[in-house]
Length: 423
Image (cartoon, rainbow, N blue to C red):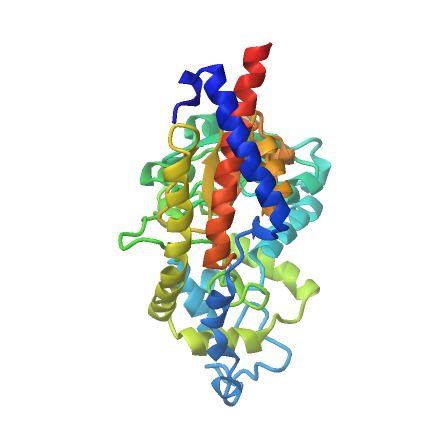
């Protein structure tokens, strides 16, 4: 439906219908949630076999390490090998941490603030900036905000960030890095093209302590038979001698159990050495029992990919339910992504309507990610982007939530048009 071509009388009549439907939803007292990319219960059940005590056997790692005891700072060998396969790097360039890749990034930024990234500590360099592809991940922005960085929005398109803008900003020595999700990006689902990855690798930033946080959270989270391809950033960087610029993080948060997974980092030899030197003071070892559990359950990358096919079977119907609802009800009113992987759909409602849409949904019992969350400081300048997370609700709840969302989008859009016409 093209709302702009409708007469005022037609819009008022349609709005009256939508008001009645919205009031009926409010009366139901629903509590539906599409706010966060949480795996649903059926997805969590896929890894219940990991909790079998027999899986751990003698608790010994491949090198004889007793995993229940202290020691092995950077992870047991077989776990490093598993994550090396996942990231396409040498196991020597992998460090295994706890359960959260966000914690890795937060901690590294804190370390760079205090000790520097091979130079003067960041907190002694005055007001600093970070580049932030938008729409992007709200938790990335929250980390940067807490440490006081000025966040520079970098527009995204179907190939990834605007690299002309990245290259221009990188010539400012106060710009210390960029943080991104390069594959099935949160929330757009975009995978960076080979050209974009090569241009990242070829960057010659003014700041010698420039770092790109390559948060490869969805590297095996495919939704189609023809998954996207992401060029290996370290292979690309090696050709330019820029490996020190990149920190890649991954985790099993949406592969096994989000609250009890394993996270890892890949980096250059110099960055790995620096991290391990600081870890010697910070911690004796991470949870090696959990590392062993994951390796014995998945065995190798092929085992992870086979397991992720089970996730895909559960996720695809959920994504399709939302996409079908949008196609049926919002064509000509809004636009949205159709991702090949990841956990989100990026919905663009008419300009100036996102906050109103989210508020209407909340009143009708549907919780969405806050409008503006996909931009630094929660401020979407166009007030139009909403991140949709289809994974958590059960199918019947999801269909109802999508139905309500569509009503709220159209209602907000008509209200906006009628308001403009009355001025």
